[in-house]
View (cartoon, rainbow, N blue to C red):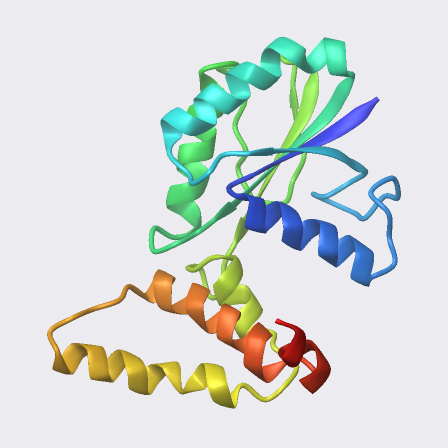
Length: 190
């Protein structure tokens, strides 16, 4: 039997793989709810109800063939919030199993129709945000270079240009990785 994690993007997939590597766990070891024994990933390339329904439809056809036992859904809260994202996930799941409802994130729910357990985790910090927001909040090194992006954002406003919080968070992580957390040797090789 195998387990599947549906993620929004390749960045999410890469993050989960790296996290498993960093904590010295392979994908075949039980990591705990909701990420257990991840055998495969499916990417949504951004979250919309239609994309999730399409992905779930593709997966539902292959559940038995692929021996899928559990399906985890990992999405960002973004500026919509945890509850609104959970509503989108539940509405999408209901197109396959009208009785299926995930009442709380991080709980497994049995789908009699699909014959699998389903769970959802929503990446957030204080109810909103995404992977980059989480990474920013758990940084372990000084972030002088990345934090200077606030001045750059202010400069943009002076030219009547803007950048969304989401774009700024993604850029912040890139700058943090490149300038604040890389060794001099790694910086030189990039």
